[in-house]
Length: 547
Image (tube, rainbow, N blue to C red; front, side, top):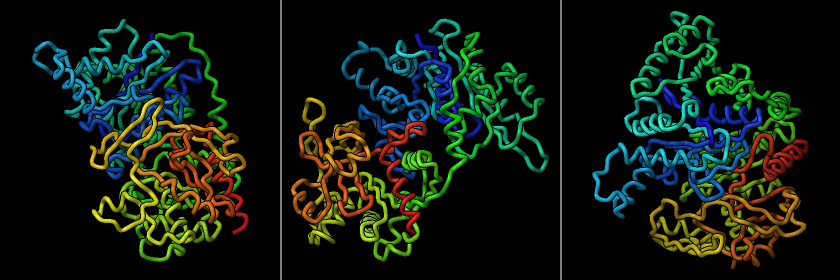
């Protein structure tokens, strides 16, 4: 039976609850415990799949096809535990489930209320798989006091009450603001946040206090006294140069010990932190630097490409170099020359995206990389733009484009080298979609197998001819152009097992030019970099020696 840790936040948002949860999960693993991490989000969207990247950052996709909050990416990167559909839920999904049950008559005509029906649905979700692990860490999105979060706080209060004493604890993350005028760290916001939590029946067992300044011992004692928490369970959390310092930093401040003490686990197993010491060493002692341009359309918000940025960091760690990322807005050279913006970079990455905006710039980025022999990695839309570039500028298909852009414009401007996928095989059954279907959850989502061509660059990178990777897209490269493009040198080096869907393309006469339809960044970890990112950064290192 799992022990449950509920992680809440107060004072302000964006304090790093997801990072703290992930680091705690890693520390518990280091002590020999098994863990699973979950995110409960109060927003009314059914999932983040239809939310703007500018609004919410990237959408993280699980093997079983769930579109989730980006915090699940942190969970996976720090623990290596693959997230599932049952590890992420929103108010929208909870209310949708409750209303579906009401329509079916499951409640036998009762009046449907937040308590008990919505809270029971949340509790049922929390309990999924509780017999599988030693610790279940559940992060509640938002901050205490948010009106939309109240059902979740009530649900975890009830859940803790339902379980035997000592099986659930609460960890609350707050901020200690520093007032430069008086030179003081202020504890009052934390006191009020805890008071708000206590007013709804939850008493935190562990407090994690974010601060940009060292917290004096007397302030820790004051917080412990007024928040009714033991002093050793008030854990400072300071700003770090890298998120991958978090497990060692939290261990130094005693977070994992405080959690185990709260559960009464004594003596606690000693942690084995060799992996995180190695990660720390690789981050802080690079032997060189490479510059990588990410040519995207959501560059104003770096969280829109969070997993890509982290995967590049992992690739740098594998090669013992620092990867200096520069964000390049694809729109700035939609109608102009890409060279002034891309010269001087050791490698170019074009990520995924939706819609036509910025795509001409992405096509020019692929052309620049192909012609200048600069290492290139195209992901999802980045692969499609590389194929369109090859079709237009090498194969002579001058009007090559995507059906996605014609659909948006309501006309037939392009010859659709990329088309809307309306039917595919998932597992043992066929999936069908229409262009005018609702947007949410209608893409090819989750893990799919691919077969790689023996002797190809990508087979060399993976060290295998059989892989599985996570997908999130509606449009595919049309197989009917394969012969034309391969005659020009663009090899279709990875295909779906049935041979119908192109998964990977690469230029044969290029040092390192690979486009993939899937999202390899979602499976990369600091202690296990994804082979594509490791190979891509290695190619950037080799190119840096030539520049």
